[in-house]
Image (cartoon, rainbow, N blue to C red):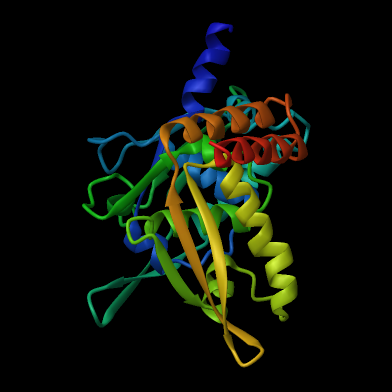
Amino acid sequence: MPKKDEQLAIQRRYKVFKSNEIIKASKSDFTLKELKVLSFLISMIKRGDSIDKIYEFNISDYWKIAGITKSGKNNKDIKACLQVLRDKSFWITDGKNKEYTVSWLSKVWIDNEKNKAQVRFDEDIQRYIMGVYDDFSAWSLLYELPMASKYSIILYELAKSYALQGKHKFTLDELKYKLGATNYTSYKDFRRRALDVAKKEINNFTDIHIEYEPDYKGRKVVAIEIIITERDERDKWHSDYYAEHLLDGQMTLEEIVKEREMLERKEGTK
């Protein structure tokens, strides 16, 4: 593997740190591209970095890391994503009665000549993403990069924040709100277009396995319990392998699903 490609593979495995507090409290109305860019930016943070540190990356390298073929639209896309992360604020609770607004980024620079971007995180958000909390979750950037649905990324991060408990029950309305899926008025549509898609991608590409169980009141679904299982090291290796191969165009999701099912059947017969 060429030296530069080797470095890109290493960057795909950088860790993303988020406090469980901010994962559980936030509601995401970001797009899939914006969520991936955000995770990529957080993965550049290293323990001990100063609050005012400026992070720089090559825009072309980002698209290679994300497994996205270069096109004339890519630079416009990255600028649009960074602008949203800079401009879109949200509320954080400080104690019982105080709230304040923060953005993910406080400043963005683009060098069109060198095709590079620089970002500085909002000072007030940094303590939630620098791994200084006792109660935080961490995962490989690689797990989120192959996901084709924003619901997969959001549900994955929520599941990681409850992984120690092994399960968590959300009201149906609460889960729709957190996933940014309130447009699905029927449970059938929400299950098919959000939950089932997210479950498939999480179970194929990440370090956890999830199932979900609907909770009924009469014939109406009123809550969803997410059951979370940590994968063993062998299964995590398979997740890495599939994520890398999908990003590099060596396997399709359909091929990965079939191979996963075959492996699970083999494991079940031992």
